[in-house]
Length: 266
Image 1: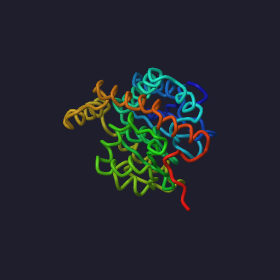
Image 2: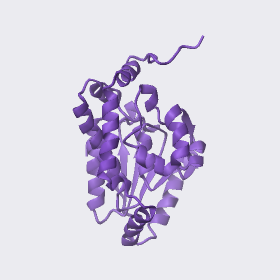
Image 3: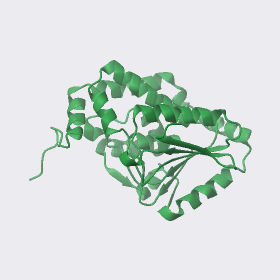
Image 4: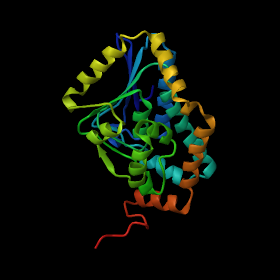
């Protein structure tokens, strides 16, 4: 593991992966994406791991894409952007398809791709002060790669509102729309997560694995197993990143100014 990630397994067989970049609010860069994918692969292969917890260090769960990573992608070709987006899509798919129960311990704010990680977990428990947002449209982009998992969690109707507006959701709103299952005061978050884990550990490991497969089958579609869908979502974000509007949105964000389509209020 790198210093940007912590991977620990306790005596119960619970693996905890901690995004460990608190100085940048646990934002994604390529190293973090690749490292997290490796952690998931290790957790999947270890027989002593029965459940997985994903959380963030410090006060934030994940702010989504790192500013420097966004800057490099703004200057990259569409082909490079596609490769980058596919790696993130594969990461989301690996988390969603984990054969062991996964719990998102949402210790603070989750934005963009960070919300995607939450939606890919089987169970999400959030601190009461956590906030959530799909802010991509304000950068001239869309939450393409995470969209299959988020829409599966919150439904198309709520997706239309929060994808299009980019507005911030409170933890209570996130619970109401189905993004998170429970909320807890920050000082009781571990207690609530542990209570959920104790229930999960009462199930047979093979039975839980088959139960997850059953849910995907009965639901009628295995989203992350659909390579065509995964590739298409990656193509959408790669194409938008190199458009005039996508470039303007990213540059405005990096330069800390309003994008050209936002009219200043009087």
